[in-house]
Length: 174
Image (cartoon, rainbow, N blue to C red; front, side, top):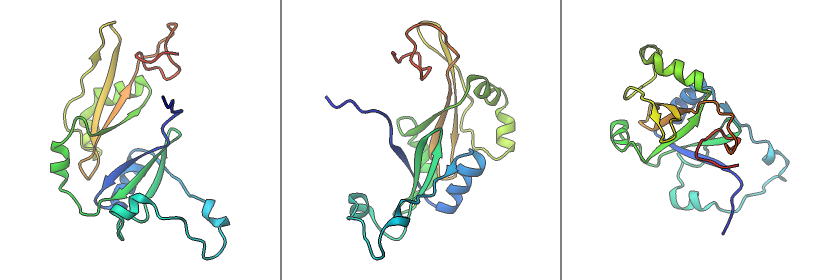
């Protein structure tokens, strides 16, 4: 068995890089990652071909936008062919990205989705708490980016019980 240590990054497919970058940085607070590693490469050095670019490469996918959220990299790639955001939205459910926020902050967002909508966020449906069999209740709010990608914002309640992992996820073990 391979025991992985953590997530390296996740990628989000977008139709318009500039619009997506603005949404993720200005509306969600992600920080752009400036990669300085290539500055030390000798002139004319070329990296080996990337399989992703071999299969999907074109002028739209060669320069992704690298962002950071809570220590995890989120890479934006423009789709080779733009997709209708409503079509992407209808595929919601399994295909989503989940981010964690403090429970009290998620509660405040869930309590005033009208304010989120007025501020320009696409809240596709009203949030509802999820109650686990042990009585633990966590909150989740769903937002859509301008390209119809669904993201979940989760707030796990604070727990001090033994056996709860440092992540705060009640299903995780230490």
